[in-house]
Length: 114
Length: 330
Image 1 (cartoon, one colour):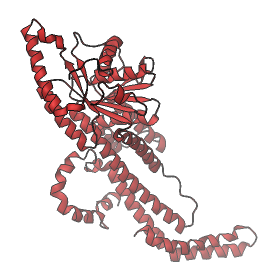
Image 2 (tube, each protein chain N blue to C red; image 1 turned 90 degrees about the vertical axis):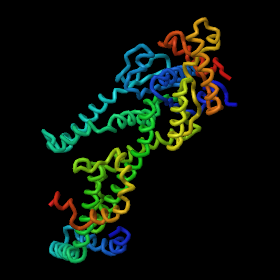
Image 3 (cartoon, rainbow over the protein chains, first blue to last red; image 1 turned 30 degrees about the vertical axis):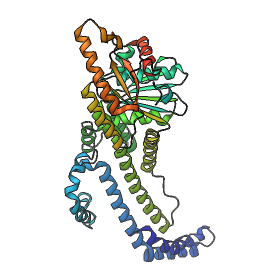
Image 4 (spheres, rainbow over the protein chains, first blue to last red; image 1 turned 60 degrees about the horizontal axis):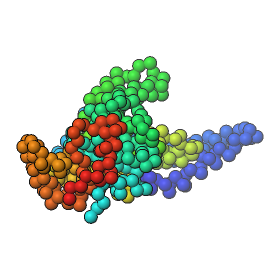
């Protein structure tokens, strides 16, 4: 899921919870509480799923990043790439399949991070 | 015909970096020191940086400067001989300190600590540290001219290709990090929270990228940097230089010239000793070969001195030949 796909829906929804916050002033106690509650319900109904999805993707990117800098820790040689370059020509036909496996919903990061 | 001597190539305004490369023991350090000295005499603030682990600048200047940082050996002439091992150790201690401080830990988790310690043994670590120090000095920009004495051939090439490897790696990391930030931003807008806190990693990456690109851009800019190969009039050296030039060209570095060192002076042709006369004759044959192969690329010749050129006195003598082109071969 790319950010471009998400953006229109954000523009649409992002005004909703902030509207709920308008009644922050202590004047109408019950009314503002009600507004707040409605805001939270709407957030839960409409956005929570999306936010979770975004955060999950964010987590995957984070794991990817960690892999890129600490790959050695898991046995992935990162720098210098001298030997991997030498082997790359042999690996080229398999790279696509390897990537696919790596990006799968259940990959090895699930094993590590539970 | 290119001007003889390096004065024209190097001392004009705008040249910020000079690199000397070549096999070990041919006179890279001597040439670097002599050029740096000549530039300093011209009133430029010069930093002469040796990447050689053999402490040869210390030897030439007859002062212990190894691992001592920038040492001013003559007015405006600063020399650095990096102690890469010490730098790596200091770097690692700093990383550990940061971890402890950031997470308020007494002890770094053993797994992390073992990883950090084992990275010292990483083969590219030494070059990375040296390279980082070079890039650091250039990025700080406190000098008018930087003279780099490269490690012997193979390492020299590896060090320069390192620039590309590191840069593209950092590029990739930045890309991933920026992607992560995009998602932070989306999550923020969905939850209508205020600003996402600044990403420290991203800032670090930008900083590293800035440093590396300042250095590589300068290195590749022919109007601002000059790259010289040092060789001796021996057949072996000719082949090596040819190969090295090719390798450097393949990574986008064009030579500004070739410097000949340890050339026997003309009067040796009539030396009473047949030993020296033969050596002289042999050198003359190789010189012919050099002229055919490199021609105009040869920009200076330094003669073989009766004794090793050392101290400021010796360096001044070398500079006469290297920079002013006192010795002519053709």
